[in-house]
Length: 160
Image 1: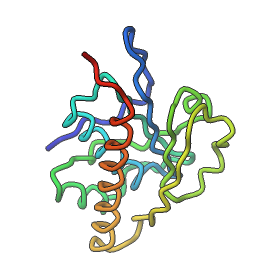
Image 2: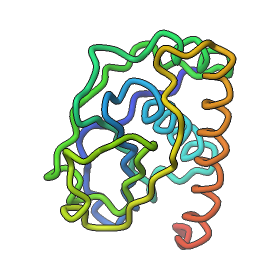
Image 3: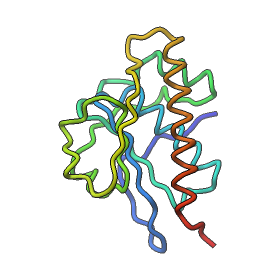
Image 4: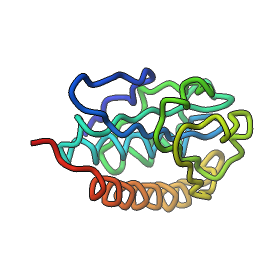
């Protein structure tokens, strides 16, 4: 299954306010890419496209998504091989309701500039790890994203 890349630009919906979620880490080449891809999949599975916007970025983005992450995600039919790590700025995060950091220092983007809630998931960095460890990180990311959507969508009234 190919999941389209996370949008870099936060858009406005004319009739509804969508909850904006940003998945952020330093390189935007591993955990945050996995989280964004799983979030896009959950958004689509739950028909929450009109209620959920997803962005992802890093404070010092890498040149490409880590190959081991591409491999681990392909094992669960999610293609992140065509994604490019992007920089995220404090200005972009001001329009976000929830910023999720992955367990890395995102100190270059001060949480005081964030408009909404922030959470740190404290996940290990997959870069340079063997595939077996990356699978464990991937599965943890997926479980956290599913739980996040359970929580957020139970708080958000559905469009009728």
